[in-house]
Image 1 (cartoon, rainbow, N blue to C red):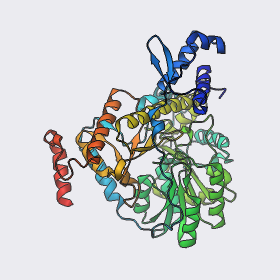
Image 2 (cartoon, rainbow, N blue to C red):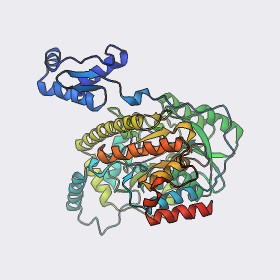
Image 3 (cartoon, helix red, strand yellow):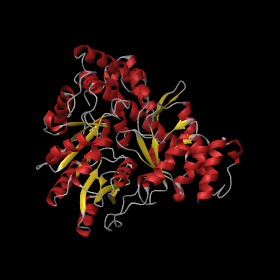
Image 4 (cartoon, rainbow, N blue to C red):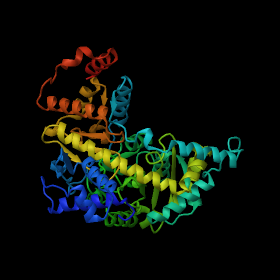
Length: 508
């Protein structure tokens, strides 16, 4: 808390007073003069305090009257239910996630989109482009031969040294030689799975989970066993224990412990310890996708699952794709007792990665500017998440639920009346708005009434207008209007969308 600017510390103090009931809805905040006197602060700091609380939705300004307490609309939405953990999961199988994802991607690319709410990354302006360009220039000056000499198989040494140093902050003690640089986290996951399992094997995953992981498993000929996952605490340890006792062929467990995609859950330390111990006891490799931990709203990132590893049973995978630069496909893997096998698989599959981006990232991450960037990014994303959640609470019909996570890039939204997100996707696409339907995040249809909404774009008129229109679409569909008929806007659909609609109808 002390590392925050004074106005944010004071804003947090008044938000706590609202939470505890000391300040109630409609109460007036102390005047600017009173705030200056109470806290011995300047007029500028008092204004920043009030404007911060206003932008976060906790107070509203009234002309010539001051600031008055209000509760953000998002806080009135009911929380999501916890999944049932006492029933064995469905037998492991895959049912063509490739087809679902391929159709989603193809249809999305056929239109000139107005607003893309389906991705899970930040806007370009949230990332330090100029600082990275300067770091690349410095790296080429230091090592002018870099573009003409092959980089080491494991990756650029300075980059791996920085990663090893920063791993201490999350409880891991790994050396640079324990780290292999990969083409993003998706290659790290591919390598981890190939190292510990074979085609036909069963891998336990969270449910819902990132559709890219389901694609990887299907590509490798492996079967996904979906384990119930809490929107708050992550993968259910009890459900996994039941699955292990029910099925004797689980070869690996894959989890995203921090800001799980798409739920946004953060696994408590006690759960992480139990999970590591459970997999250790049953000799089941545990693969940790730690892509999002730096986006958790906390001064330091949460402790890594691998910090509880005692035998090399935890494979740690991560990347910079979400937190530093989407254009740099920089990931890495620390594979524990499978490290040598992973390195040979990497050599056979893609050889070594180019070194310039690694060297530049290492230069930048070795300075205080990197942590300043992360603090700024977390602050921007928090504001954007809360603004998006408030808009959903205002524009979507009653019965909508949101899981508001403690960080990250997205919201998991439950639609009212179990409305099909596939229908919402179809109707929104006509309006050139792209959303991620819940069917992408499971091999079953159990999440068809959910959407994943991106919060990575600065909240402005385009986002507000898009969310308002999306709310109208959901309201119309939830009332049953237009079921089996063309939308009133159908005559305005571009030809390529009409062709897709017709071909989809014929295929159905």
